[in-house]
Length: 168
Image (cartoon, rainbow, N blue to C red):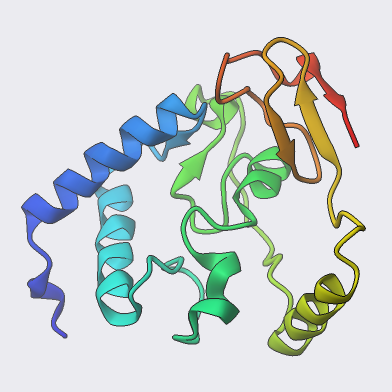
């Protein structure tokens, strides 16, 4: 598969769609449009190669089950945005980064090695009653999400992080 197989129109369409979806959910795409479109081109190539949009900055195995955690938006986006202001590949940026209030530095890889991911999947399958992450509830609209920290902005009502409470 050649990189030229991805048309500018395909990239622009996906960029517009991802941008609309991100903003509607309280997220922002990287404002460096040239860089962002390069990432989007890579997402399209990965989708054609594997059948899913694997993160362009990580090595996908080609096994969807093994790569579920790195299908864009990946499982690590929200904690990366909370801790560093950008996700690992920098497709998504926080409000502070978008406004120029926060400087972007190197993002460490959160994805565990394959053997650890496999062990975690087996552990989760054996104990379905235990939640691996806390559940956060928006006190304004009732939106629930399971993740390490509450989102910066509720994707439903746009309430700020301080309006969330730990639900479970």
